Structure formats: C-alpha cells, structure tokens
Image (cartoon, rainbow, N blue to C red; front, side, top):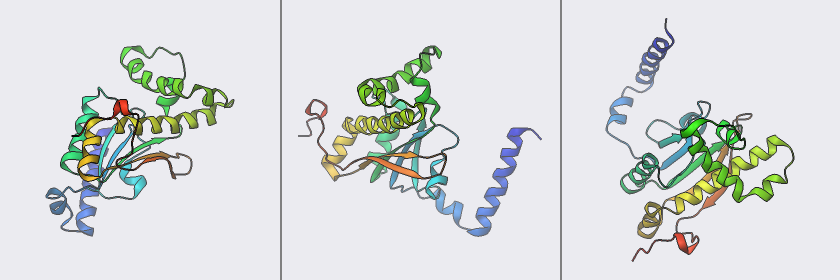
Length: 211
C-alpha cells in the first residue's frame, strides 16, 4: 500500500466512526460554519489547531504558514483575516507559535535558503533586530530561541492590530480580541504570552481614521 493510499483508507475509517457516534455529524457540518476563533498558526505538522485545543471541525477557522507570520503584503493571510473578521465575525484571533520552531531557528543563521525562503525568514530577522539587546543577553541558544519565538508571536499580534481590517472591526463591534500563544512540543501545553483587547491604541502612525 502506498503512503497516500493509507491516508485515504484512514479517512474512510474516520468518517465511518464519526457517523457511528453522531449520525447527523456531516449534515450539520455541511450547513453550518460559525467559528468564534481565527487561528493563525505554524505549518509545522506537529501543531494541529483542532487537536491541541480539543475543538471540533467548524469551531476554529485556520490559516497556517511558516512561523505563523502576519505580513502586510501577504494577500493569502489578509483574505483569510478579512473573511474571518468581516463575514464570519470571529470574536478572537489567535496567533500561535511553538517552541522548537524550525523557521525561527533558521532566521537566526546566515544560511542562504535561496530567494523565497530568505524573503520570508527576513521578517523574523526583523523581530530579532527589534529585540536584539534582550535576545543577545541570553547566552544559551535554546532559551534564546524560545524567547525569540515568544517575541515573534507578540510582533505578529501587533501586525494584526496595524491592519485596517482589525481596526475597522474594533470601531464597529469592539471585536475581535487578539491573542498571542506559544505551544510547547515537549509538554503539549499552550502558553499565553501577549494579549490585545479590542480597541487597544497603538502607535498613532498605524491607526487609520475610522470617521
């Protein structure tokens, strides 16, 4: 059996199990999507949003990319954000990184990962530059990378707050709240590291006129 065929077989088993437990499961799922949360996470296969939060399909709207970045020119991310905030009217947006992130570690090196990855990882290098004094004071690599992971999440939450999508929703319905979390691969526990309540003021240079 080929590897991909095993996935299809497992899918059939999973679907049958869901129907056995709840005969209306797929009918209900097909007609309803009212998630309260948008999850912006890392593409790492070890960090699946539904499994680590114990939620069911339909409860979390998910976007994933390398190192959970919020980049103001990423049309993919921004289209997900706009759909979730404007149309699904999520109440919370969560940026969730994870300790042991390969993207974060790669960004601290001078390795040439060629054009596209270099461009992507440059955003994490910028986070390091912003917090260089704090990070350089941490002599051991693992805790330094852990702290960079937390600071990267914090900066991505700030990048969310800088978007007109979020600011317009804050002005109109006092939501969504923004959350920065980090997942521990070693213990499976999520650590909240940064929060922004709806309507939080940021540097006025980034605040759009909502009048």
